Image (cartoon, rainbow, N blue to C red):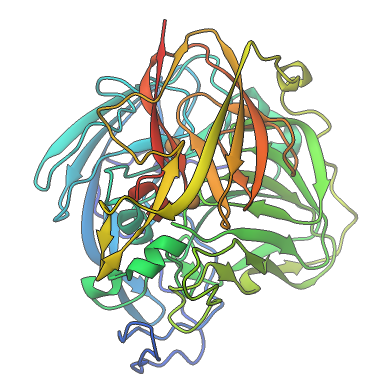
Length: 501
Ligand code: C2O
Ligand code: CU
Ligand code: CU
């Protein structure tokens, strides 16, 4: 794989997205329809080439860069759209680091609201100037974050995004997200080095010509806002040009504020080789893979036959916040909590060939063994009419709580001693799914679905519970756990944990 960006200057305002030049794109103004916003949008035809953000790679144990958070017009189809960008692009640059590296990021806030930076999934300190989400960077201010990645950090796909309470859903939906790739020896095995690696940042931003596109109703916030179009690295329905006999290795992050993706590809078996928190012991054959907001996966696809195949997101209903019911994926796309099946991308294969060999072993199988717990705890995710303290657009907002409480940065909800291994039962008593996420300390899901492995985000379906085991090792500090439907996080479905040595 080439890392051509390694020598690029750290600060760049270069646009990385090519226009997805499809046939027949005409700039008509599409009026919104009943109930949605009435914003004009550029027309965009599917079929642009698959593109990726710039890679920025650490050298001699260090990667230092500036991320400039700024509203910009970005190229979209045959026109432009309004977005929040890092260094002029959405998603922002992909940061490639190794265990033991130091990552230094200076965040510049050119937005008109508070922001900050979180490195989702990295097992790094949540204190001081590291992954400290209690730091707020006001408009016009800068803050330099320094992350020391432990030498025993697992390789995998992680990501960065803002975490300033109350602004997270809007800022991430508007485009502020980027991938972080941690590489180690597993990346050097020949089956992987000979594959075509692609990073897919999945998002469904509000599409419009100005900041008005970001407006959202109280109902959409309760359901969790969804956009009408799914973009891959900023491009609508891109086409992946693949060669028969060459393994395609796709690393996905669900950077949507609320949308779930049940990924499946026509005519091909998928093999998962990583979960959120790192590589699996061996490839796991699957027909589909669900990615809730915040989750990541790494999938192998073996093209053998010439043709064009669709990568689809299958239909999924994640429940409803009530009052009006699940409105589906209607025009405007922002009020429903369910998603109709759609095409995420296409893969066009040239040539014909026998199947490519898959790697037989990835992570050390011993590192996948289920840890045993030293203590247990139950957390309850709930929705109900709040205590009246949360008012939104013309009515009272439903309360989104963990253990009956909404987020208070001054309160510590859970205290754990360093070295404990806790088993948590996450009980969802609400009629909506909630993706549960814990910062800093990866966990194993005991009774979850999917390929397993180390995770930091897991979907807890409506009216159900599941158990996770968390070794609180290596790092101390105070941070958060929350629902990764970012509107729910902003509405208070978040708690504070303090791990002390
Ligand atoms: Cu990706 Cu606290 O979040
Ligand atoms: Cu996180
Ligand atoms: Cu939620």
